[in-house]
Amino acid sequence: MAEGLSNHLFQGKIVAFSAGTRPGNVHPLAIKAMGEIGIDISRNRSKHLDEFKGQHFDLVITVCDGANEICPFFSGAKEQEHAGFPDPSVIEGTEEERIKAFRRTRDDISLFLRTCYQGM
Image (cartoon, rainbow, N blue to C red; front, top):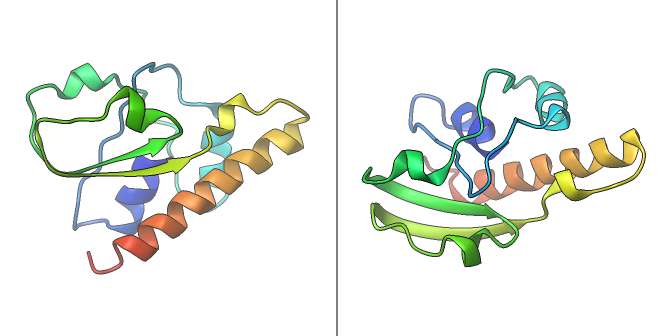
């Protein structure tokens, strides 16, 4: 969701990439939550951090709970920042409770990006 939001909000100004320590499929509820605000991430794919080894980035932002502890240093980053957000995929409950968690995380990431990087 962070990759999709970043690329949408700052289109033409930046190119965002997303990766994790345990990649899997893009969660269907993430696709649904993003689609609700007009951002299609259905073609995105989950990538492992290793795909980006040796690459250089102006900014790396870790966004998942615990990500800062799992991958605390990116040698190819000019700047690194951590903004923790709860992982909505771990929420159990009804479909409505689960999609609410994805919406909340989506909205929290969007607010963070808009607030911290509005000048981009």
